[in-house]
Length: 98
Image 1 (cartoon, rainbow, N blue to C red):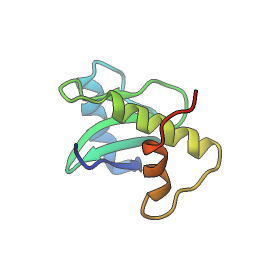
Image 2: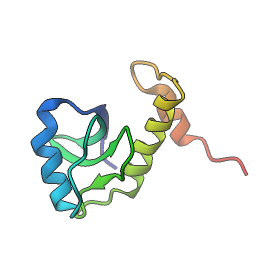
Image 3: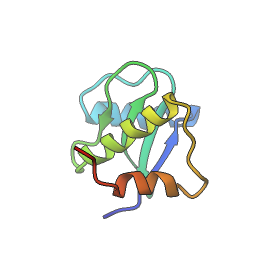
Image 4: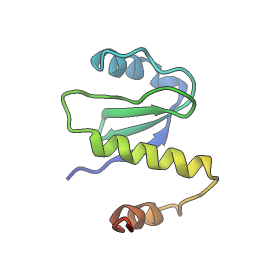
C-alpha cells in the first residue's frame, strides 16, 4: 500500500501531465483535472470536464483511477471532506451495499 495524494491540477503541472499522457499513449488533458500522486510520482489524472483518465501503465492504477472518479463525483455533488480526509477514508472502507 502506498500513500496517495489527490489534488486539483495547477498550471505548473502541464509538463508532467503531458508526459503522463504520452506514457499512456493518450492526448494531453485539457482544462482542470484531478491528480493522484505518490511521493513525487504522478500516477494518474482525471479531467474534471469531459475526457478519459490517463495513468502510468507501469504502475497498478485501476484503484487509483476509481478513487479519482469517486472524488470527481463528490465535487460534482458539492460534497466536501474534512481537512484530514477522514470522510473519504471512511467511504473507501465501507463495503458497498447490495
